[in-house]
Length: 377
Ligand code: ACO
Image 1: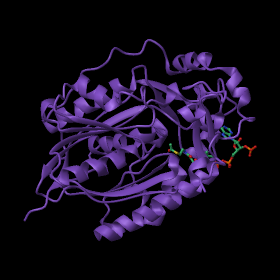
Image 2: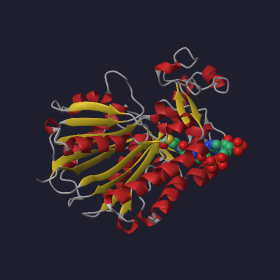
Image 3: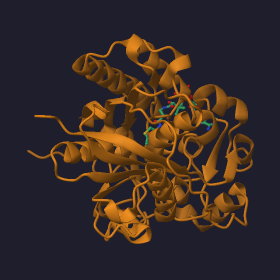
């Protein structure tokens, strides 16, 4: 009996054109290019002028064109994100409408920055068990709208972006051939966004107007450990050695984290795809955007073996081994575009800042995280 695999046959991204530089950030935060560059590797990030669902749909349309698959033939849409515009209905259903993918089941996956890779693993499993045949998996993030722009600890780190892949059932050994998913939940209080759930009602934070609890150094250590251990496990599981990894496409939260993970995995930095300088941390969009750009730059050869480690709030972590197929060029290309932004990235951020409630900022140091001390039993 032949096995079914889930080949990645289409890929596409949509990146907001408006660029926010380190210099822009230093116009309203006590920060500077030197600090941001040396501590994180980041130089600039993007700010979107369109909604997350629009970004996701644009990326998905490009991925479908690349695969030569009609929207009507999609069985499943997985929308990986942390920054939902609505809780109900879900966002995948919004993309289904915009794509015209009427036959598709639609589900959201939120495991923070690992959402795309958790979604890719889930959709692969659904194809491999015969539940669906064609799937679109999206990683999208619109962080700029819910960022606490008064907090330099986090405001410099994130950016907006979207990318998607198309998966199709095949009997060739392709696509995700191994994945290790996990969660270092003891560290869940190290990154918590207050104002993003009903647990924060009546706590002085308006829903959507956020305060970030963020312990960067703790996350840093746990991220390196989680991604490194998951990579070692998945490589052992798949019988893949460091030398056999053709390209590592990691989550990009900090250049120094990536260097630590690559070193542990025994993969030299020349074999690591980097976008962190140009896009910062786009949470769920980071890995798929890096994957699409690796293909655009000709860094993925037919039959290549890829390693994809990531971590996010939770603290969720994962690492996937992907075996690429024969085709590394698109079957079709869509180049339709939204109307360009009428404001610069800095002007858009200043508008968001003007709407944020300074009263909540002053509460930042006073309010204990709501659930941190909650224990059952
Ligand atoms: N500009 C200038 N100074 C800053 C800035 C800034 N933007 N942000 C923090 N600082 C200051 C702090 O106030 C602190 O000052 P103090 O020492 O006077 O108190 C000092 O810089 C902190 O320095 P370090 O502790 O040496 O900073 P570190 O090297 O740990 O780097 C960083 C901080 C970049 C946040 C790092 O810890 C990190 O990358 N952590 C993980 C990243 C992360 O968590 N990303 C999100 C993960 S989850 C996800 O991807 C959704």
